[in-house]
Length: 53
Image 1 (cartoon, rainbow, N blue to C red):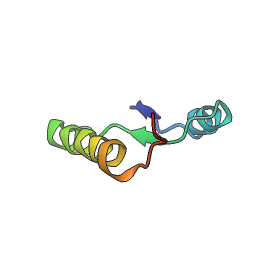
Image 2: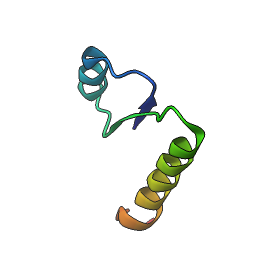
Image 3: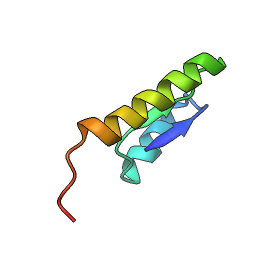
Image 4: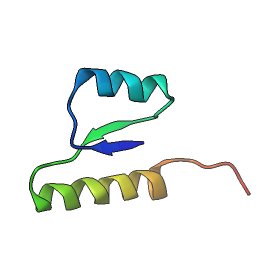
């Protein structure tokens, strides 16, 4: 997963070419940043199904 300030199309393409599974652009304000971090956490800890250990 890529979390970056870049919105450059080539950066997005390069990231997926290098097997990133998501490309997220950081929000400008702190509240937006906190929100996206919470959403990432929720996704990876409650939504995604992981294989058993």
